Length: 372
Image (cartoon, rainbow, N blue to C red; front, side, top):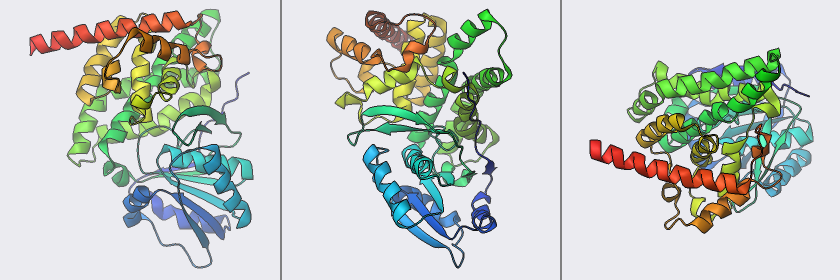
């Protein structure tokens, strides 16, 4: 059964988007607000945030840094203690996922204000949960969508470039993780409307990012708010969100995110961003599926964007066969989404895919070095 949770009830993306917030609060009669944010995210957004209107009590709360059960519980307690009517999350994916989780369990409306374009958390009806040490736990899907999503492109333009690049890696997964599932379903009969939209959005993610990512990163480094750059931002946040929003579990995650989840259990990859680990997972999934020509396309793009292509680039100083099998074993534990793929996935198969990817990457790097 497919349950489509399509996206926010209201969405604004322009330089004046934040100015709608007081009107939204006033229109809905909210007077007690919890405002959850990080230190850096608040500093980034502060020049553009309007003043709180008289009569609105705002509980200003700093995020503890991890979307963990403990942090979610803390925010929920604050919501209950202060009889909060509206939760506003401002920041990156983990801040917003925590705000969404608290809103879901405490039955409160939620406003998401991303200060990064690093994933589709501002849009999606789910939260990815981690242990306090950063190790992945699971993801929770919620019944209700975000009530309001506000994007000020200027804030995101001034955000750290590595989060933007990681967002590109994460969003490419929307296509690569769902491609085989859609092909398998189409072989059995026509897709329904929800899955058709999801499939089209996944293809849009790939097409826009392969076409515009290099130029978008260049423009962001130069501080230029261009059409190409904005198309990538909205693809990462909005288009990516509609893939899983319409397609439910059939297009939310499979191999790439399972590799990501496995990598979070290794200390060497802790410094990496979510999208960087997922980007590597894209390559492993393609190797598992034997889509070698597509790997070549991504190796070139990743080389330009500085996304990880090998175990060494993930932070493993001395990769070994033992390490490969450890990663593979963690990738295929029973609860992992990789088992949604339309073929049996085993530890030896994933280990072989990782080893094959190492060989392909080495040959690619050698050829690039010789040609240059």
